[in-house]
Length: 100
Picture 1 (cartoon, rainbow, N blue to C red):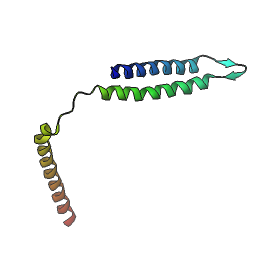
Picture 2 (picture 1 turned 45 degrees about the horizontal axis):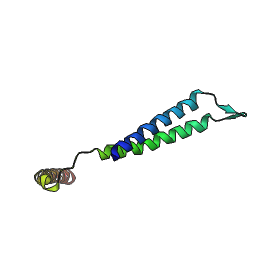
Picture 3 (picture 1 turned 60 degrees about the vertical axis):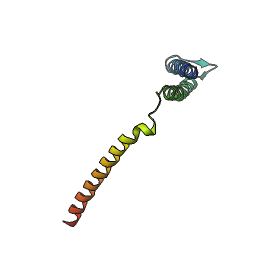
Picture 4 (picture 1 turned 45 degrees about the vertical axis):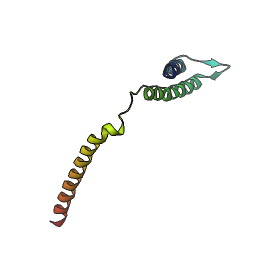
């Protein structure tokens, strides 16, 4: 339920923001000799930026359950061994180049 509300927020902010942005760019809006196009461009851009927060919240709320630490133990040990081996090889190669 929360994810659907955040999705609606993001979609509406995108729609309103892009609409305001395009109206501000393409429609001449002068009232009393003052141009209000810039106001719509800036407010549209702000709404689109606000929608990015909604998209991030929606996406992070839809991530499937993360793997527990017990399930990662075997993989973590293999990665640690690989990193240590690679580090030793690089250190060994660096020492042989620095002494030459």
